[in-house]
Structure formats: C-alpha cells, structure tokens
Amino acid sequence: MLFLQLLINGLQTGAIYALTAAGFALIFGATRIFHFAHGTAFTLAGYAFLFAWRADWPGWAGVLVAVAAATLFGMAMERFVYRPIQRHEGSFFTVFVAAFGVGIVVQNLIGLLAGRGLATVDTSLSFGTEVLPEIFVAPILWIAIGTAAVLFAALTVFLTRSHAGVALRALAQNPDLIRTYGLSANGLSVLAFAIGSALAAPAAIITAMTSGLNEAIGHQVMLISIAATIVGGIGSLRGAALAGLMLGVAESLALQFVDTQWAEAVSFLVLFAFILFRPSGIFGVAAAR
Amino acid sequence: MIAYLSNLATQVAIFGILAATLNFILGYAGIFSIAHAVFFGLGAYAGAQIALLLVPDVVLACIVAAAIAGGLSLCLALPALRVRGEYFVAASLGLQMVAVTLFSELKPLTGGIGGLVGIPLPTLFGVPVGVLPVALAALALILLATALLARGSFGRTLTAIRDAESAAEALGKNVAAAKTLAVGFACAGAGVAGALYALHTSFVNVESFTMDYSVLMMAMVIIGGTGTLWGPLIGTVLLLSLPAALAFLPFLPATEVGAVQQIIIGLAMTLLMIFRPAGLVGDLSRGQTTA
Image 1 (tube, each protein chain N blue to C red):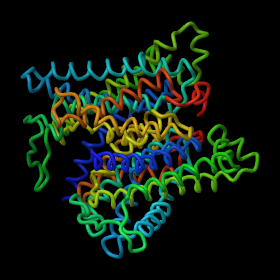
Image 2: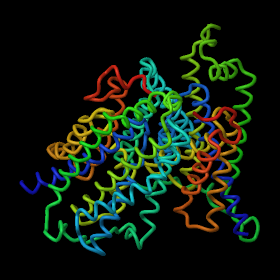
Image 3: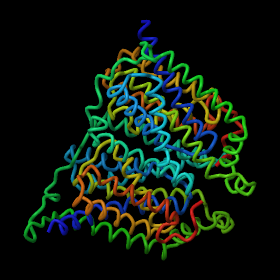
Image 4: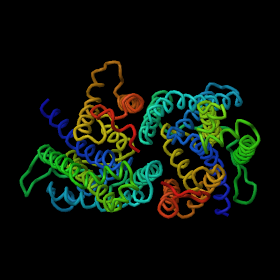
C-alpha cells in the first residue's frame, strides 16, 4: 500500500519536474544557451503566486501574475544578459556565470523581501482524501497531471503545426538558414525563452501548494532540469519530460528505503550514472562533447 | 584591532588557498567545478578529527586532510573525464548538494548539524603555534606550485586541453591523467585550507561547506580573473573585506548583511561577464573565446 501511495506522490512530483525540464530543454534545444537561471524563473513565478495569494487576489489572477513573472524574466534574460554576451562570442562559462549571478541576486532579494525559509500556500486543493484504504489523493494530483498533459499536447501541436513552432525547431538545427529565409533569429530566441520560462510557472504554483517554496529552491529545480535534460538526451523535448517524470517517481519510490532528505541524492545518482555510462541520454543521438 | 587584523589575514590566507586551487582547475584546465566547498569541508572534518582524536599537530592535520580530499577528488575527476562544459557543471552541482546532505547526516564523522566543537589549539611538533604563519606558508607554497606547474609542461598540457581537448589528445597528451592530476592537486589544496580553517576557528559545521561558499570561492576567482596567478588573491581580499565594508553602512541591519553581500557578489559576477569577461586582472583578449 505504501508503494502505491509513493507511486501516486511520485507521479505528482514527476509531472512538476517534467514541466520544468521541458521548459529548460526547449530553451537549450532551440537557442543552445544553457539557461542556468531557469530555476530563478521558477522561484520568481512561485513567489509571485505566493504574494498574490497573500494579498487575497483571486486564484486565476495569481496564476496570471506567476506566468507573467516567469515569462518576462525569461525574455529579459535573453535580451539583457545572454544577447550582449553572445555578441562577443561568450563562452559557455561566461554565460553560466552571468546566469548564476542573476540567480544569486534574485535568491537573496526574495530572502530579504519574503523572509527566508519554507513558504507555502494553503488551499483545500492539497488536502488529501482517502480513496482506497490507506491511499490518500488530493485534488492537486489531478491538477498537476492534467496541467502537464494539456500543456504537453499544446506544445506538441505548437511545435509541429504552427509556423513559429516549426521555425523554432529549425532554429535548433541551423540558425544561419533561419536568417537566410528572412526570419529573425533573435525574435525566435526570445520566443523560446518566453515559452520555456512560462512552462516553469504552473510547476512553481503546484509546488507552492504542495511541498512549499524556499528562496533557494532554484538550485534544486536547476539540478532536476539539467538531470532530466541529460538523462532524456539533449535536444529531445519528449526525452526531457519523460526523464523528469521518471526522476520524480524514482525520488518518491526511494522513500521506501531512505529518509526524505535523501530524495535529492537519488536524482543525482541517476544523473551521475548517466554521465558516466551514457552521456548521450536515453533518446540522445550525438554523443556529448 | 591586532586580533581582528590577524583573524582577517588568516581568513585571507585560507580563502586565498581555496581561490588559488579552484583557479588551477577552473582557469587552467577549464573544469568548472561548483563543488570546491565540498573538499574544503572534507579537509576541515579530517583536520578536526585528527586534532580531536590524535594530536592537534598542524602539519599532520594538513597532510591527512590533503590525502582525504585529494583521494575523494575522484568523485569530481570521474565525471570530468567523461563530459565537459554544461554536463560537468551539472555533475558538480549535484555533488555539492549531496555532500551537504552527507555532512549533516553522518553524525559520527561530522557531528551532524551541530558540527565538531572544542578542537584544540594547533601545535607544531609539540610547540604551540598560531594558524596565521602556517596558513601564509601554505598559501605561498601553493602559489609557487601553481606558478611552476602552470609554466611547465603540465600547465601547458592543461591549457591545451581547456582550449581544444581533441587536439591535445591527437598530439599524444594523456588527457585523462592530466585532468585527474589537476583535480587531485586542487582538491588536496582545498583540503589543506579546510584543516587550517578547522584549527583556526576550533569549530566546524556544515554551514561553512554549503553551496554559498562554493559560489563565494568561484566569485573570488572570477572577479579577480581566471587563469591568472594574482587575480584570485585580489578577488579574495576584495570579497573578504566586503563584510567589513558593509558594516560601516549604518542603515543596514546586521541580520541582512549576508544577503546584501550575496547580492553584490551576484551582481558583480553578472556585470563582469557582460562587460569584462576576463575579470579584473585578466587580459581582455583572452577568456572570450575559450570554451
């Protein structure tokens, strides 16, 4: 019975991981920018929702504010941090340090403004009811899984059917050709950041309602996103989402054997094993450099 | 005042060692570790246990700390051999986060969250000594070793690996051995700094080995200038004098100094990367195109 309960919890966590990881993978796949501040977009969205909730705004307004915060942050990062660096052939390390610096600033600003430590949004949605003997399910589980499913369906349709989506995929393959066709690589890059960051917002809101936020949660989100992207195979959105789901379930199932503080370690061990034995990931084609 | 200055000087020497060794793998070998505080911590726990259980001999503590940190540096060297760039940063980020959990859970070895207290005052062959001269000597030795290694064939091999790994391999350089040695040297150095830190403060707990400290060390190297001998030292002095400078701002509540300090460090990192990626000391033509 414990197994089933943990599996259910794992699916809920996994849906959240899948959304965040897909956002990261979308940005990395399309722009080749290692967006280390993706966790910061997540943190900002979560706290935006938290502030809206504390100010007694209606739920939908809070969701809107959270999505807007993440999206604007992603677009601003592209415009004001990554693009100036890319202009002078910024190396991976330059990009990484710049994004990391932004993450530290935001983390400490939130610590100053919202207080340090755990912060949660209490709603009746995260209140579990006993559906089977000893199995508790909260409505938030269905919301998490539903949101993830709907967003992935929408994303797939967007990337395969719409003009902008196809252009985004083309950007990943050949930016020069995109320019030759008269499309704006910069504009598409901003679009990738907007969509990718927006995907972190629902995950952040659900996290705020369930396990809670803290100002340093961005690091953990980043670790999961990178782990899922690498395990899934760089460039594969489906791989990242699936790996995110798997990591969530694995972390939860591991609780049968170890205490909660080790959950993170499980994800890390999976990542470590993949880096050592299969750096190209599950769906990866090209070997990692 | 003398005590304050001597404490600050000891801190500068200890963090100078950390920055110099991190710079060795980051600036010369292009291995971007955000787990340097882990090896600092390993050295600190090792040094503290030696002092508590055996004798508080500063040289013995340093040697044991260097051996343990250097030995466990394989945890970092293994992924560094397989992948680079983004992938390696991810691995070191994970290592840092798991190590903090380990440090707080392995109570018999590390004292858990409470840490190890009452570490006796250091001696050298039975004679009581201050940590400051030993730390300064260790810093000088490590800077000398860095300069010699960087100038010699080993350093050139590392730079070659940083700039073009396949080319270095094609020229017959043993990439795996060079990387493992570089990581081992840097982590052993961090271990020495840890042992000195434990003997200096006579108290260690996991707080000093968190990601924040890894970031602080990275910021020291980057703000000073990666791949330069003196840059990391200048970064160390700058960043360690920051709390003292902030203390002069009367409107700042003492509890928020840490956060404000972190914000300044973060901003400095981002702005430097946008406008002067080579750091304060670094040569501007370099550091822009290196991978």
